[in-house]
Length: 107
Image 1 (cartoon, rainbow, N blue to C red):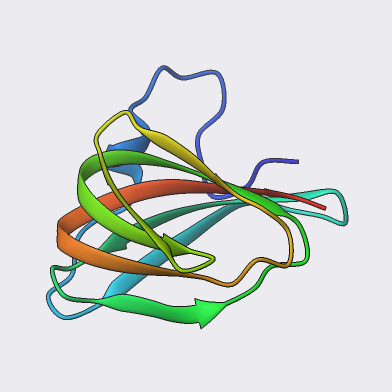
Image 2: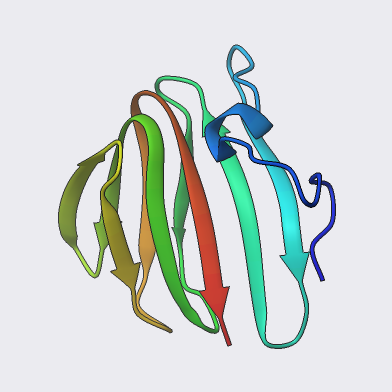
C-alpha cells in the first residue's frame, strides 16, 4: 500500500522530495515484505557508503546526476536513466551533483 503520497492525482515524483543542504532526504512510499519504494534527494557530495541489499534494487534518476558503484563498477546516471543493482552485490551511491532518485527494491 502506498503512503506519504497523494492518490488519484497526477504528480511529478521529483517534486515529492526536496533538496536539503548537506543532507540526503528520503521519503518512503511503500514498505512491505515483497518490496520497498523510496524517493531520495542527495545534495552534491553526499553519499551512501558501500552496502548490499537483500533484494534486487532498481534506481531511476529523476533529477540531476548520481554515481553508482556496483560490484566495483561505476555508473553515472542522469535524469531518466535506470540501473538494476542485483541482490547481495555491494553497491554505493554518490551525488555527483544534486540529484533525486526513485529506489525500488523487490525481495
